[in-house]
Amino acid sequence: MNAIILSALWGVVMMYTGVVTRNTRNHGVMAIIGIILLTIAAWLEFVGVQFFSINLSGMMSFAPYSLVFMMVMFVCTLLYFILSGPDMKDVGDQVSDYYALIFFVLTGVSIVAAFKTLLMLFIGIEIMTIPLYILAASDKRNLKSNEAGLKYFLMGTFSTGLMLMGIALLYGAHGTFFTDGINLGMAAVSPLTTAGLVLLMISMAFKVSAAPFHFWTPDVYDGTPTVFTSFMATIVKAAAFFAFLRLFENAFGKMHVQWQLLIAIITAATLLIGNITAVFQQSVKRMLAYSSIAQAGFMMLALFALNSTGKQGLILYAAAYSLATIGIFAVLVRMKDYTFEGFNGLSKHEPFLSVMLTVFLLSLAGIPLTAGFFAKYYMLVAALKNGNMFWLVIVAVLCAAVSIYYYFKVIQSMFFKEGANTGMRTGGVFKATLLVAAILVIALGIHPDWLLNLLTY
Amino acid sequence: MPVNYYIFLSVALFCIGIAGVLTRRNAIVVFMCIELMLNAVNLLLVAFSKMHHLAGLALDPGSTAGTEAQLFVFFIMVVAAAEVTVGLAIIVMMYRNIHSVDINFLNRLKH
Image (cartoon, rainbow over all chains, first blue to last red; front, side, top):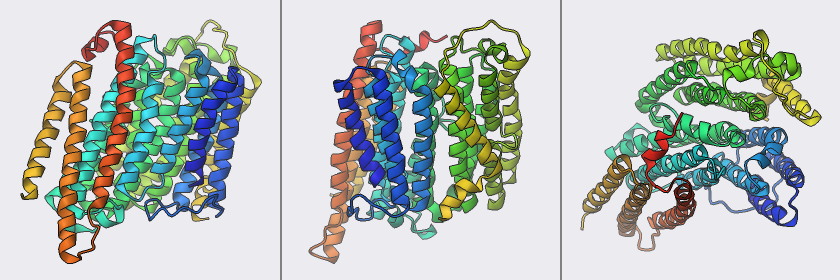
């Protein structure tokens, strides 16, 4: 609860910061202070200190699992603010408002991490996505940004409509919005429940961009100003996944066998389409958009398996994927040319950045000693433990092998091709933060327990 | 009146909304169709609310069963209003740039 209240308040504080000072540097500093306070607030709640004791009437529960996820997201946002925050002023003048919107998104993230009723799920998802429509369209003169904003908005509201219909049908069947009240087991499977489940599954698949509902993702991620794509593709996507898992575990966990095949098909389609299309991309930004679909396929395995390994794996995956992607995007924002050729010869001019990028790309590809390896490992083990659909694990492993091709294409451009110096502006803080992110990626790759032990704190 | 009629009506409205979203090209009309979907859900929630309320009253005269769905309807209205403000702003911004609200126009600009 601390995090929800503080993030909403700090969003307002950021808006006033924009009134008090026009210096974008100060806005960045305020945002960083805010996110640090937010992390501390979530940590305090984790160790049992609550600012307010509010009677939530069971609508939300702040279990360690939710709080650890929140903290992971806040730390990733902190790194994102330090790395990409200074680039926000290239999008428009209203930097403080962008920060405010991001804080409102974080409110939504905190709500979906803790919901216990479908009402809170709906409100959380909406609080999370409505500010994002604005961020997607924030480059007002750029037609691609307009297109991204409009497309994201139409797709987002359309899937919200589907979700609401699903919620209404479930309410009709069970007479309650509480997930525990819906989770009644196999005896309760009525046509209304089934229709509601399928509609919720489709709408959540839209939100996390799982195939066949992924078609908006490349255009939106490509058109959105790159600083905000970074946030959209990481924090928001991971939070949507967390909501997806939480919903299906709490509300439909007892009829798991009924919907397992559907999820397995969606997972396989997401993995195949994401990885195979990513191979053919010319632009690194678009490749990362498809790679985010491909990574979504891996995160879907947690949902498919629905066991404790998968749940732990999702936290690890969210951390590994967010850290690596934020790092890559932070460098990409400062590149002039987003194609693979733009990376040619980067190792000559910016050796430090190339090494950091290599660590992140290796992590996304799932090479051992990086966090991405253990994240993928946990997902595959979870799917194997689940037992009955071995083919899905084979598809996932093959797709992971395909993904190495397009991640290594960037590494190849950087180290083995000649290119002109594009004169990137990089500061000491930028490099130091990239180093911290890379160290975190490697540390999680050697000792994932450091993160996962928090779950059993 | 049995609740079935309400279910059929709101599902019909919902399907009209979906068909509109999938086939129409004018961004404003698409947006109206999305609103239609949301309002179909509102109708259904209110109908279910009444249904569960009557069922609850039969068991216990002081029952408040079913009231939460009506609260949910208010939340949907508020969120829909928030979406309208953001969505119309985006559509107006697009109109300023290309003097059209045709959603296919933007697809033609790609690449």
